[in-house]
Amino acid sequence: MTTFLTLTTDFGTVDGYVGAMKGVIAAIAPDVRVLDLTHDIPPQNVRTAAFALYRSIPYYPPRSVHCVVVDPGVGTERRALALRTEAEQFLVGPDSGVFSLFLPPFADSYPQAVALEVARWWRRPTSLSATFHGRDVFAPVAAHIARAAAEGPVDLAEFGPAVDDVRRFGMPVPIEDRGAYRGEVVSVDHFGNAVTNLPERWVQHAGGETQVEAGGRRMPVVRTYGDVQVGQACALVGSSGWLEVAIRDDSAANRLGLAPGIPVVLRKRP
Image 1 (cartoon, rainbow, N blue to C red):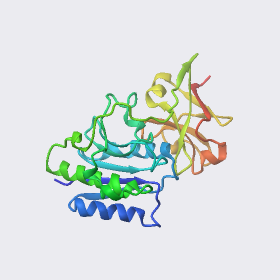
Image 2 (cartoon, rainbow, N blue to C red):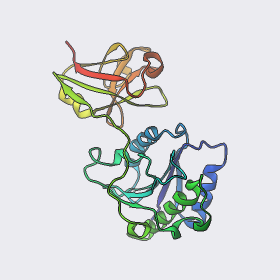
Image 3 (cartoon, helix red, strand yellow):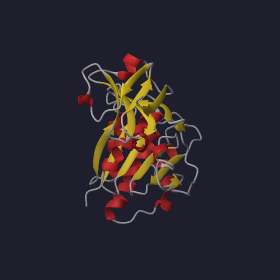
Image 4 (cartoon, rainbow, N blue to C red):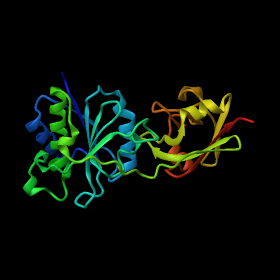
């Protein structure tokens, strides 16, 4: 059985940090298939990393392992964690809020989570780097979990004590107000599309022809980018199931001044 282990970091690929992590993994679990999810997360941007995971992880086979190193608190007392999701995906990384979208209300149940306090699974317990836990803690633990997953059931309790208070970032909650659905931009992707916290089901609840107000503009809600002209603003449900504000063949973030926290309103067309 092939076991997959993905890497998500804000390291980029120039400095060799990702290569060091892959070397550690290869020494522990040489038969595990290592895949790069992304290394282009903006530095310390936990929210962008969380959305990258949310978009990607559901498409991996059960028992895959996902190692995440976006870690503003490296070297502090922040915890190192391993989680098992309801879809039998394993997540390994810092307790920085990066796993927020795998917790209720975005998941139906709370994942099993442990703090990685058992040092024998680390790379060199007696010489732990204060600045590179990706190499010394997260990569080796992820490799050990992946190797165990390839052989049979994984007992996360071997890696540390259970926790039930995984840190979340402040994901704003949208509201329904007098027939309108009010949310905000929570993330901007590589294309400049502004992802909101308005879920697809609210677009369906609105019913009929709908429009979105954002960045001082009103725009239609469409099915796909090709439903509008080049340069025209629109809103649509993206592949992750959230309403997005876009401009065909251009950046909505740049053209409309959209960034996390900017209000977005969904309502029926008058």
